[in-house]
Image (cartoon, rainbow, N blue to C red; front, side, top):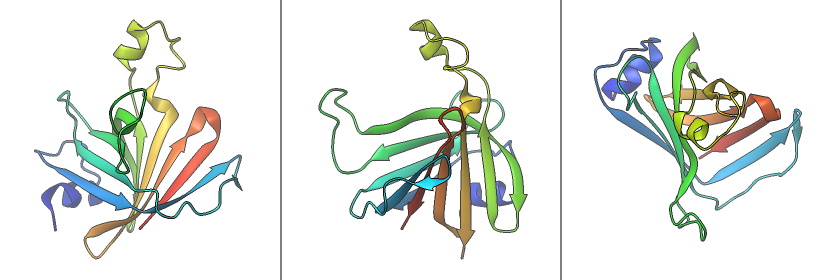
Amino acid sequence: MELLLKHILTGNNNPPQGSISFDSSDHIRFQNGQNVSGHNYGCNRRLVIEKNIQGGEGYTVSIYNMDGMHPLWQNNVQMAPKRMKIINVDGNVVELRGYGLDENALAMGAPLEAASFENYGVALMIEDDKIVRAQLDIFDRNVSIVYLQ
């Protein structure tokens, strides 16, 4: 088992180093608890979890579009890096929740509520020492995106 995954499964918010990723080729979007998209087969995404890249407690979680570059942004970032901490471990399911503020968003004039990482959460399902499913929750929009293999 990868060292970082071991720290995540034990609820350790102070891992020494490392990163892990989960590749998804399908996702389903939920709005207000209702499936609004059906399956999105062939939509390749990569969820990356790493030791907090700014130092300190917790993790940095990012999502990338593996199907190519965005025509306007000229990168493949689907979700910009968010600081998160583990808030619950229940068997093989680990929940992380964002904390703190996005200084870049604040610098661009975003209101505090819009710049809060607390609007984001990720739940990981881990089986056989690997992530097999992930769910991104965007709390202020009541949106959940379930990423499947």
